Length: 192
Image 1 (cartoon, helix red, strand yellow):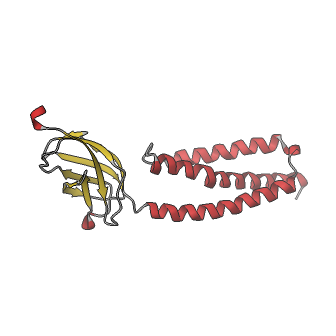
Image 2 (cartoon, rainbow, N blue to C red):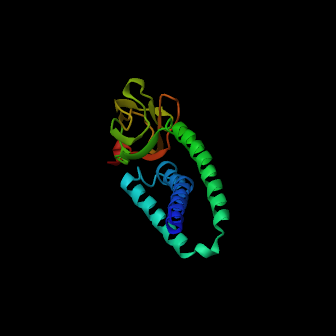
């Protein structure tokens, strides 16, 4: 193998390792923050993830080809190896954390924004659980009547409560885990 070919092969391996490290330590946590924690997006499309990974690879290919004399190659190999090892550990911890996270229901949307007594509420999200082990839907501390239940859709009916105004709507699944609270308004029929 010619020296240029060996250098090119080492460069490809180095760029691939950097891309994997950045994927595990930056992109996956950002995806968690935007989809699970802050509910900005429901899901990041796989095509978007692929484009991000390709962008990372191209970016580091450009940098490593333009700045070869600034870094000691052996020191860079050791640094990337350590980052790769850290990535494996972080990826393992994140996978365990993510599997535990799947036990918690998430409400992405509900319609309508308000109801009167007897009105139906459609709740969309994930991790609600299967229909055969349905949980509960609560409006403050009052339980709603379940009309339809699936892992990502619930239709519930508001009972006659006699209480009006803003309320927190939550889903409790069969693990007894509570979802994120969502604001709902109970209107007095006399106001309509």
